[in-house]
Figure: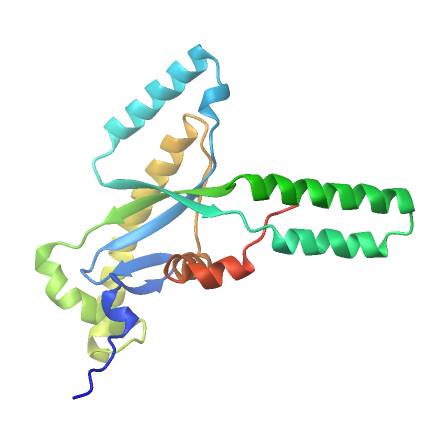
Length: 215
């Protein structure tokens, strides 16, 4: 008896992405901020104390869940090296050609001798639908964005979605201002960026083929 392979979507907790918001299968919502890094070790003792104090106050001020995520990947320098080699071939000055060649060799040696990681930081803000709403909300929400369900529910779902979206964005504004208080800049990912992020998470091999560093 043949056993059909399960679809990968069955194992995902995400149902859809709409208006830069991730809709979960349990009816909850997630909005993801990309955050700048902060080199805490290079700060003076007084600056470190101030950052710690502000961070503590920020966390204590929240009355909703907040998840901090660090995404680490091995740095893929292949596209960068290919770009340098292309510049080297087009360069007329022999001295500059030699310099580019030495730089390429240096970069390859440096990366080959150590596992250099690229790190990206995210803040995930959550908003959950009440147990009372969960039963009918998910199907209605999917119908509203054209993914199935009863079309008659679309209007109700649109109104419900906008209401929850407003509440989620109020939380997002609070987090953005809180992070700014100790020097961390943040910006919400749009729908296209969210799709790219999750594609990279669930297809890391394919993602690494296109990953590169910025010159």
